[in-house]
Length: 228
Image 1: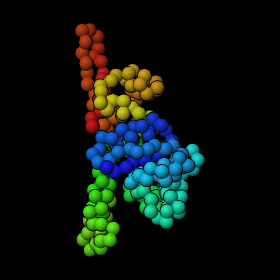
Image 2: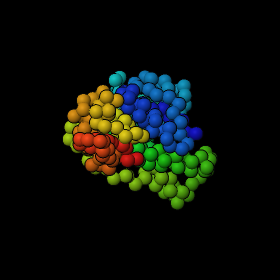
Image 3: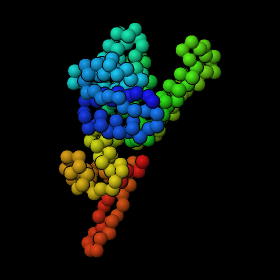
Image 4: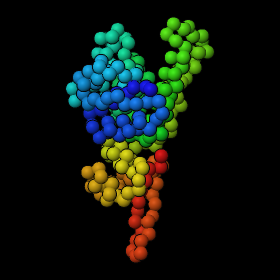
């Protein structure tokens, strides 16, 4: 099993990502952290194979976690997939220079998340099958790099004014059950109009489906359920 530590300052989002990990074969969450300090401590004590690393943390940047772990271990540290709302090229380049094996921009669905972790699992498997003392030829090197950089899953641009954490919460609420906008609002702690706006976006993006439930009288009830 590939051990994962989830690092995110929002415990609700961290929980969503942990549940996503649990749905993918070959992975298990061994810890969660919400700050740079707790992430570094978790990496030291739990020795995970992979960090799912947010950039914006209360006491610094997720990139600080990579800096510190690399400095302490002489370069031997967990791999990292950056999961963040940060889209600026400076942050992306910094993550690349620090050796991040993936970069996933919020908001996203389970399909995009699974695609990144599945690619990492394949990379992890291939490297371990070669052995630490093996010498790879050019074809093997090219194959490893192609696995590490899978073809991105196409995504629609997020609607203006949407919050990535809130979108993730609404998406998770309807992942395995059909709910009305009012029920989603109650489950996530947001207003009904806000829930309706996020649900409509998920339906347009193909990440949720709308079903009409007809009663004995009156207008049909709108019910939403995740499409993944």
